[in-house]
Length: 80
Image 1 (cartoon, rainbow, N blue to C red):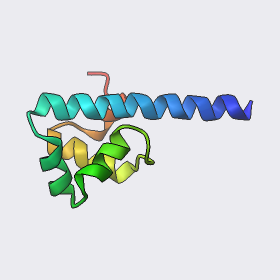
Image 2: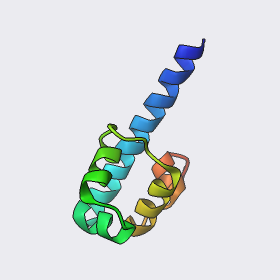
Image 3: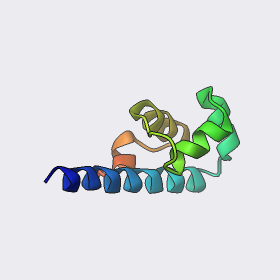
């Protein structure tokens, strides 16, 4: 049961990453601008968005704010 739980978390993270990428694309903002506003390097942002680095909750919240979304929308919890 434990490996299955890990897989579900990984799938959830992938959904969040996809939602973050969509939010950035639809905002018209460049990833380099997002990274600068967050105070991180472009490569750090890229690694988080592409799964080679852990995705942090504060990253999700900051990107949501910078793209005009809510964290709940990014997490897929907004039903409106």
